[in-house]
Length: 150
Image 1: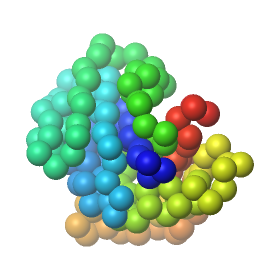
Image 2 (image 1 turned 120 degrees about the vertical axis):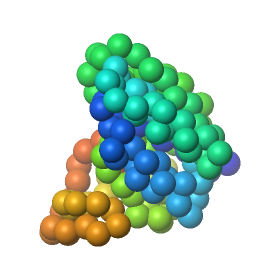
Image 3 (image 1 turned 135 degrees about the horizontal axis):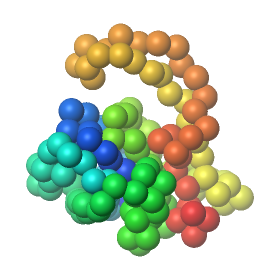
Image 4 (image 1 turned 30 degrees about the vertical axis):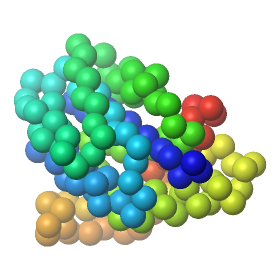
């Protein structure tokens, strides 16, 4: 199926934010086939707070010794078995139609390997954000990519 995707979230000491990140994935208009959280040696309850979403998402939580964000991301990529792969940082959130829009663009443009998006940074909580300006984000946390290109 063209809209099957997985999400990889590298996480380190993200107990305060991982819930908002996972909630934003659970709220997607196109649900992911799987969400892979790689807890990169956290000293807080990141893994436990992530596991609390097991009833809402097809979720895998992996704990590893701290090896850095890149290594944690690569561990997650190795587990992906869907045609598309998206990334989310443990302290970021997605708008509800983020995956739907990016998957539609990739479906209509087989020449594209991946799609990044725009973002709006904010301070404070997701419930009461203090927004900043919108900007293009050419980074992992806005990327959806064909898994075979990753």
